[in-house]
Image (tube, rainbow, N blue to C red; front, side, top):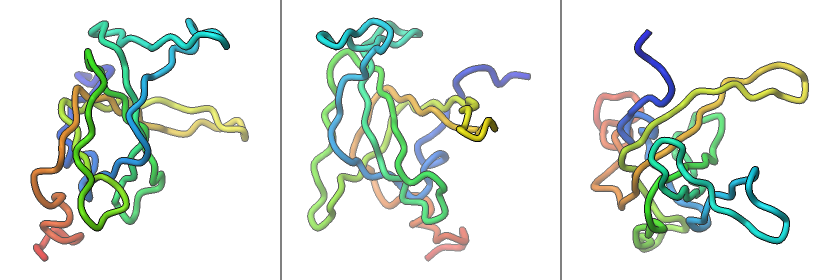
Length: 141
């Protein structure tokens, strides 16, 4: 099978209704190398670049997990887009987005399929999210 590791994907494929940034971009802590006294930033295993993380709200009304963490591999801390007037959160799109599936062990002992999102950058959305532009039923709206 050709699917191995990270799966490249356009922002609109993963987040058809768009995403909204919650909080700020911060360094991703390397829990294996950090100590209580000194935090060490994690490096991307593929590129060697520092990893940054942020939480976003998936605007899909049917999304099971509304808040999603996205990791960005970049040499410097990514700068979020400007806040949109009248919105409590900043709309954001991701460039160079990849997704990786993994199984998370639940307290019940059962596994749950989860998704890990990584990008190379972020920007302000160019227009309406794909689902909003076409309507939830895909017929325009």
